[in-house]
Image 1 (cartoon, rainbow, N blue to C red):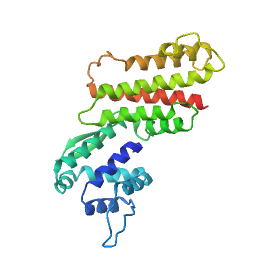
Image 2 (image 1 turned 90 degrees about the vertical axis):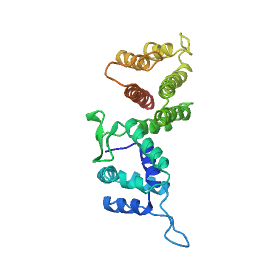
Image 3 (image 1 turned 120 degrees about the vertical axis):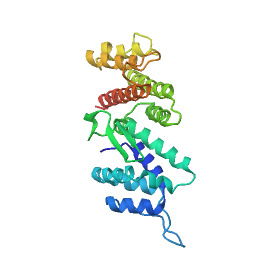
Length: 265
């Protein structure tokens, strides 16, 4: 199982709220090494930052083993945390971050939780958010940091309690708009644009018809995804609002990655 940096950070925050001995024993059983902060009076504590560093270095099989330990011990782990709402808040955030990565937590305290892929084809794939951030960071786009911030805001709105589904999709949609406009702005320095540069449709048409940056099917795909997440788009039969927002955000992230990857060449 491959997790995004956001989910590893959430897992680190969750583990950081647990009893220190419980954390250590779980990590030892799973073969995950962690260096704790030393103190003058004792061995000190394992911080969330140290957990994050160790978990990022862990193998997929070690993470799978850690999940197995957690999901079959949640009742015991929660028992040791006071007040309980601290545990519950961190657990819920962890669940929703996993969902953004394409994994759903099912079950209950007894007989235990388990994790299933929302899309069976997702197993073994790197979460697109991390790849997108990497491509944006190495790009020459003027608003690359703003696009990263928007996608982070989209994830935060999805994960918070209660979730802000409208805010999540709005930030994702604006990130796609901003990315397309940034790419067009670079080309407009040498090839004037005939349409309105403030309108997304005109921007995509410019990228397709005036400079040939996009193929016909690519243009149709981008416009289709944008329409899918636009205000007023209905929830398809058989889907919950949560499922539709997760799907829409995932499609936006993938389309943004495609655009910036093609731009970077």
